[in-house]
Length: 220
Image (cartoon, rainbow, N blue to C red; front, top):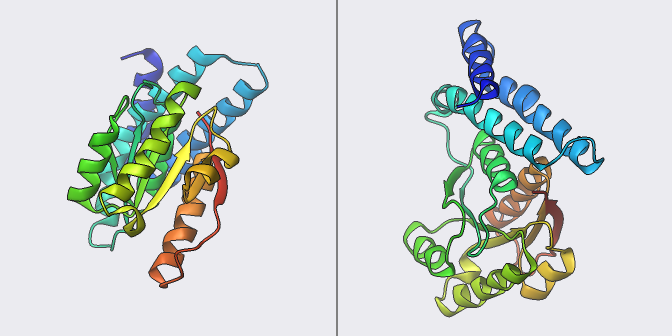
């Protein structure tokens, strides 16, 4: 554990001790900091090691706060279940972790399969868990094809149209998402939450299955 991780945990514990809402600390503190770091990364002011360090510090702080957040949400109906993971061949997790945490904060049950997840694992978990959304991240062009494979195998398993799919990652484009038949193309975590809320809200209102692709890019 780095000094940054310890400092993040100390801030989280101090916030709990003073009675600050954990959700506020996560969204306006840790998550806001990550967004700032992402913008600096895009501008070339910080580099990948800084992004990784910031993500790890955020995760350390959120681990302290999430049990309290779960207590706040206890007894409230879950908005839905999201199965998420980095597709087979990729071991990057920063963007995926931020998206997963943000969805959990917003009231979703999130099952994070981690990185380098085989398509077969997504299929098996989808059959057993019946998620509302299956989300995959691809960080290299050569692994994007696994997102297409997942779409095909979900259809072959007879479960594709009982759930929504979301794709993201640096090389992924709206055109790619449209071409493979994904329901959501995601970008940053806040937009992903907004679009998942929208598409699941439409599903719950028994909207037709021919919804347009929601173009939100998941950043990593």
